[in-house]
Picture 1 (tube, rainbow, N blue to C red):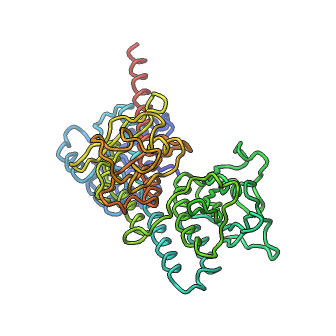
Picture 2 (cartoon, helix red, strand yellow):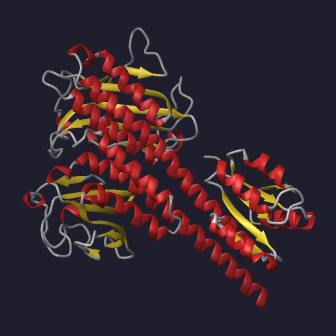
Picture 3 (cartoon, helix red, strand yellow):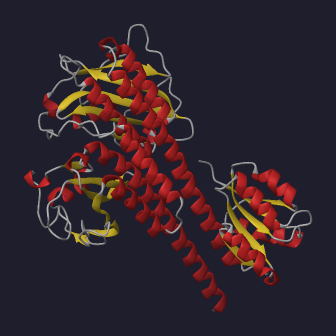
Length: 501
């Protein structure tokens, strides 16, 4: 997403230009208008995210401008400017949903702090809105794939493969996608279907297992995300290929237990490099595609490179279909977009998980200053059970998730050899069905979430992958917002100290 724009609306030239100069000194670009009608015309542009709005305007009262703008742009962050004599109007604006208000004459640090916070919350909401739309596309794609798989046997051939690559392109907004399947014989990946790029008549060169990005992803049973291949030290000899507009791509292996089937690849996203959300959505699609292709006589092999890969249960159909998981994540998005404060954002997200899965507790842990230690950042207990406040490093199933970045989902975790009763249970020590997944930020695993569903059938890996994507997005936005606010407050404190010195 491009940087949201700021609009300043004030009929007094002195205040307009003073605000512009203050924000420009803080590295923020603004546009200026003097009337309410001009403001409404400008705010029809969705690129404006924040408006600094004076209440006293020559043509329309600021409250009327505010009401009209919010009717068409409910995502807009409005900061009200007022004189001390306009408190009744200020209260009405706050009741209607104004983000903040500032009294004239303005204090520079207060103005910058308010605008930066408004920008941060606008970005957060825009990110969740974008993710919600993509999850809607994911929900549709999963339903369409499941419907096609239930049709005639012929529909499981090339037609299904082409639907797979189209679905990946639609969900990720990728210009080019491909499905590579593993030969049973020589252990080579061959292109089975592409979208956005025609396969030459003589096909494409096969990729041996363990070679190239696709071969490495499948051999290691790990997804790979590359922001810029020319600057990625993992692939020093790989240059952007001809026919592609971007050096950024995402690759997810198709695995059914230890059975290697192939890989899904996506590149050339129209609005920037592939990111962690893209990779999470691609992994979810890869799980569904692997299930569809893992049929008697279907494509797949157990090459030597995967001999030590841990056996994991096949994804069972989720109650209500695979779309149920996508619907859950969309409800998480809807809940957190209504919140601003970081603590409430995480609480709202966990509450949606708890209610949908009838799970308690649902908790989120992040790494502390001590190596490997996890500290509970947020929790929803449903009035029934609380989770542990801290977890030791590298122990139990939870420690495995933190170290490996994988998902653990089990209806009877106590039967797993890695299970530890003082780690993988809530505070009451009673074993329950468990779903535990990683919280990722900028390519690293920062912590884990875990929930204890009431129904054993809800301890499904598919839920784990979906929740990992959604909760990682929530944590990422919260951390960025906290970092921004801390930086602003440190700058403001330094300026105050400098003035008093």
